[in-house]
Length: 271
Length: 306
Image (tube, rainbow over all chains, first blue to last red; front, side, top):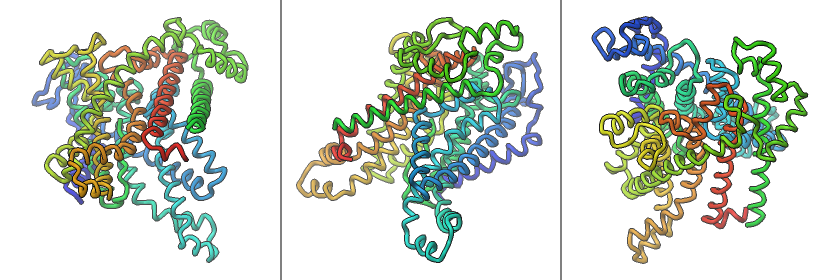
């Protein structure tokens, strides 16, 4: 594995650890307000300073890793499952299934970037569950296309005909003979997918559509933007945490891609 | 070529219809009463009922849907609840600012990414290549709502070169355009590099070199023109990210575009306004993609034949 990929893996592991162990690591209660100390810059007691309610920014960033990781991982898990299922249907059976699924994909992709997620969360209301739903609503499309494309290639191969000649049913052929070939490209895409979902959640939170009542990096940036002039530390530190996490995932994704599947040159998009 | 255009136009109409339908049903199939949410906890039942009648939400769903489509065909997107103005008028007033921002961001991205990608491809694995590919990874990982504030801190507050926010002349466009264009520049430069690397290995490049063409002609005229197709594809796909990214960037810089209008609509729970903005942004995207498809056909005659 390349150096960058190792760095990426380390960043990912640390962020995951922070998310799990946030209560043990955080120096203070992330919700404890000390109004008399609002907007204070970094100090010995509060290494990254305090926010507009005097809450400890370091603790809020550590807890914020929970929202990021939770949304990132669950969005990708749902997207991969749905994408695998629909992509297999379209690619293996073709005909009507393919036509219907591909047209649905065309329509979903007519919504640019995360606009669909913005619209869905705006209408459904801001909550963690709705954010995951909204991000997955478009997230599955990439995996479905990938799976479908691979199926179209693989289903014509001789070993699939051989399995069929031996009497294997559709589900056995799909599960035992075709899907195992797909893990490498899916893992690569899922790594970029976690980065995109974390960025998506942060964007929604920044727009005021984030989960209420729990610290998230995007939400902290949303609060910070109004005080950029008088208290830039409100914006700088959560943004740094977000960027390092996404950078780590992109390093890891790049490294995995080079290692697992050199043919795949498509670059994970993150807007 | 004309059947190609006709097919793309038919698809455009289909997608437009489906997108509008989806947006309509989002608003009507959500759990809970949107009007109660819109008016807040303190609303009286009579007010909710009055607004319901006023918006026609007490009519059967089928009738509402037909009315919505009919309005759409006539360019009527309903009235904003908050501002009590036609949504269409508000959207049209804000659209130019967003298009200006997105175009400026795209120009900046192209000006940075294409030369950088070509330079990287000419000398792969050189220090320049490693440096620019590392920077491009940083570029895609940089959330615009963090890059924007950093640029404001450095260039507007400390150096005082550009205004902090708003839209007043070209100087106010610089920071938002850089903010929005960075991720695109990063993705484009990687795409240009890999497309050029592929093209450079082709036999016609070797043939051109044997014929004594200068490297400059070889790279720019013979190489780059052929690398342009995949670059255009990525550009087309990324315009979606650019338009939805504008929503975030406009909030950072208080840029009076349609993204800012959408965020205002969301904050005010002004559903007709939200619906109108989402539709307008999606349709701009669909139209731009149609333009890119046509551009393709112009660049690559093979596509017209399919």
